[in-house]
Each structure stands twice: as C-alpha cells, then as structure tokens.
Image: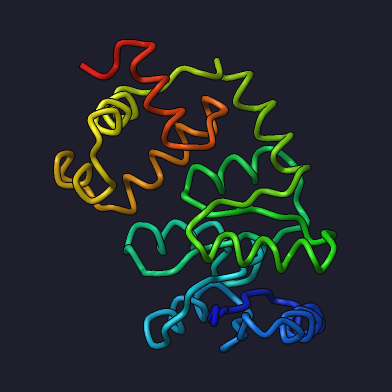
Length: 206
C-alpha cells in the first residue's frame, strides 16, 4: 500500500484527488494539508511514502517544503502536481530533488501511474514537462557534468552501489540519488549500464 499525503490549498481539488486515488486499491490517502507548514508537521508525525504536492500555497510554498524534505532527509518521495508548465518552476523542482513533476490537467490514469512509479523509486515527469526539461538542459550545454557528478560516474563505473558511493563521498544516500537523477537527465541516459558506458567512453572510470 502506498501511503499518500495530499498537499494543496484548494479543498475541492483535494476532495477530487482523494476520490480518484481511492479507486485504486494500492493507494491510500492517509491525510491532507492545505499549506506547506502543515505538511511538514504531518510528515514529522505520520509515516508517509509519497507526498503529492502543489507549488503555490499560503504560509509555505511547495518548493520550499520540497527543499526542506530533501535537506532533512525525511523518508518519503515527492511528486509535484502543478498548473505551472514554465521552465523556471520545473527546473527548480528538479534541482531541489523532486522525484517527479506532473501537470494538474493530466488524466487520472496517468496520475496513478506517476504515483506508483515514483513510489517504486523511479522518477516520473509528464511528457510536457520532459520536453521543457530537455530544451532547458540542451541550452545549458547538455552533456556536461559537474566535478561531483564526474566522481559519481567514476564510482558507478567501479561497480559501487548508492550506499557505498555515499560512504566514499561522505554524503547521504539521498544526495547520491539526486546526483544520479541529474546526470541521467543531462546525458539522456535512463539506466546504470548507460552511465557506466558513458564513464568509460569519456575516461571517467579511472
């Protein structure tokens, strides 16, 4: 069962989401929050697998909540559900470590698919979001990785798993996961084998 926290400041929208998600036997909406501050309080007291969260909310917006969840290493996935399809919001969410980003006008079936994929440890970006991300990353010299990302690639090519890489770099496993997700998006690679091949081809395995 995937335990979900809904975070949105519109009661009617939350009600519609709760009903749609209740139709799937693998998803349970445990509770709801109407702003970011309330969401953080709930996350500290209730076990949640996935946070389905809007961006623009009173008191504390979703982007800041996302940043705090990742910084404090709260054990849950975060799927952003927003009406905003501009690159500033999408890129900011990705860089703050969002596990997925979908638009509010997606069909219910795709929303369920996104929740299940993110809950399983994978990323999910709706097709419109993926296209926007691709254009933005291409404009920032797509394919060029930072020194920290090069180190992650080298350690991956040496057969290390996320936990071992975290130990080598003296960072958290979640930080390693974020590095890997960003590398995959930059390079257009969706699996570990591809990352190893890239590292070898570019001399990053030594």
